[in-house]
Length: 416
Image 1: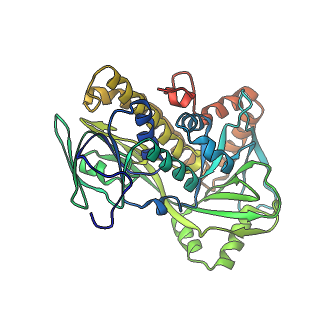
Image 2: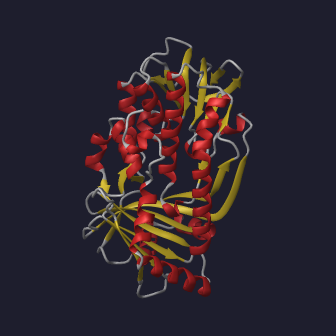
Image 3: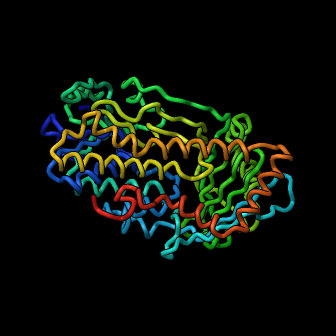
């Protein structure tokens, strides 16, 4: 097993569950199931080493429901000191050349219970906490290796790792990202809609405090989101047409900062770029099926959406909560949780919500990422109308928080 790190020695070749992908989705699934069923064997296989995983300089919006899940898993207490509550949100719509950016819609970030609807969390902190919790929960972690092939049978899954190690399992859960190789090996096709956009991500420091305010500027090329982090820092998620994004990413630091300040503005004073800007192609990706016999997709392997609504990570945590509850309920009833009839319960739970969010993000991106004056007038009128109806604003905030009476128990802050 050259170049492989095994956090817990692989002293057996059979596990009840193998998770391919050790980022926040894969790790949280392993911890959730092991927490509820400590007697079963769970293994996570991740091609990156732990040091690479925790170096992720990006940050993500963790909605209230996902925060509940992380709290039940016992990691939120470690994450919270690094998490910035989103206290309010402002939405503007303007051209890059406009001197004034009028505010069309504002949201109070508090829910009915007084808690923020979301926190901004550094990805590296979140993954590090989940990694340690997985170790404490006796999850077998194999890093620096990956699933290179597998054979789905009626009785189980025979898995071959790139290192040559072979293991068997009752269920293989694929959380290996939007370009999932396991999804392809399983023969599951994908509906893909490219947007000819690249999302530019970076982190900046600024002179003045942001007061926990998130700002989304809708510009003709796409949304420019300013998301508050701890201290006088903000995470930026910036959508541009592909040709323009490629030009921006090739710029020297000085020129890039000038372009950045044109979009960010001077409200928070001088800016300093803290993380090298990175670009990610944007598009809509929906797997035609989330399950096969003894195989399940979750996270970006099942769905990839535009970041315009900030729900990509939260959809992944919803998958975790639904699949974990499906597996645990079946196991407690003495059922084989790897069979298709059991896994269909997970698919039915998640399919509609995922398609709905994919369509919503697709429509929002098309409506707001254009330079049409008639369209701009219509959308600004719509934003202004929502701003004047408190009940509608409350509905949107509650939807963004991601909970609900029919949500899986982990998302409601309850043990499975």
